[in-house]
Image (cartoon, rainbow, N blue to C red; front, side, top):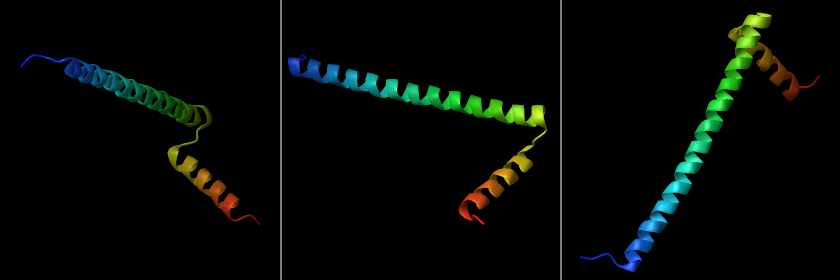
Length: 72
């Protein structure tokens, strides 16, 4: 069965859509990895630079949220 022009157009359109989806996926992945690295760096600076550990950090964020939700 020989390839027709319509088959070639469909293959081309499929490749273009695949390229668009893969490009989007790669951008989302790289953006997520950059955000993860920045958050990790901030947490390391808090831990080793200021001595603020995970438990204290979570407690402070929780208290701040409580103050914002229940102002005096």
